[in-house]
Length: 265
Image (tube, rainbow, N blue to C red; front, side, top):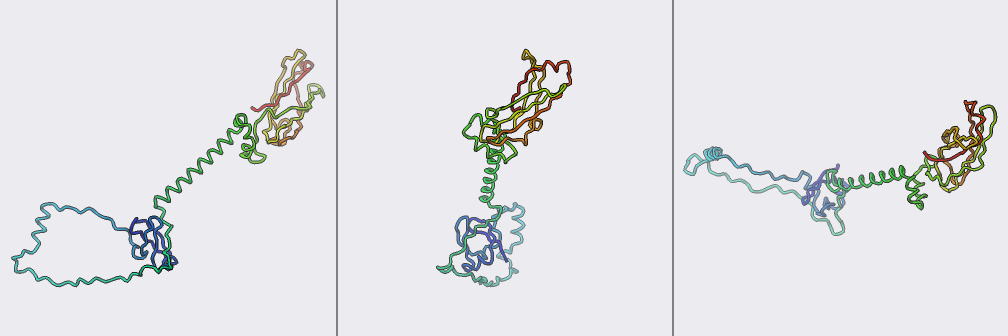
């Protein structure tokens, strides 16, 4: 059965197993201060020194009143008391070939263990906080540190988030045609010219008249223009297709031009 022992030098508590007691005839070494002692002889809690109470004057008089006086004939004769005390057989020091086992398992109340655990938890929290900040600020970090793009890309799970680098996004092969009364069709190719996974951009379509004056403007999300997901893979081209229904017949004939722009909100 396991027992709890205390180091006689530093009072650290340890849990000792029968296997450890059998290694060196009960001798063990403290893992905190390296003191060698017999585990079974220190199983009780370390003694605590309590302050002595000073008796009050009236208590001293009462105590002395009860004490027998030298001239009192009724004082009994002293009785001889045996001074022999029982002896406990303790094992001798371990043999040279047997080294006392080191006790490395102090109780959870040991200050060293609590301090080490606290430092590890603090370090883990700092690392998690740094990763979270890097993930949230990855877009601005790309502009400030372009050489760190690949490192920032590794913070994103595949297919779930991408970097924002609008300079690497291009609109290619766009066309705008009238397909019927008040109905238009827009087709284009959204290209990712970088090798990184970028966030799919938003497309802004602007319709103009013969004087290049703006008649209407509308913004389309990646889902609206036909993106396959929230990101664009590196060095890829994604087709975009939009059907525009205009409910203003009076201005339909005035539409002669358009502008298509990709941006991040």
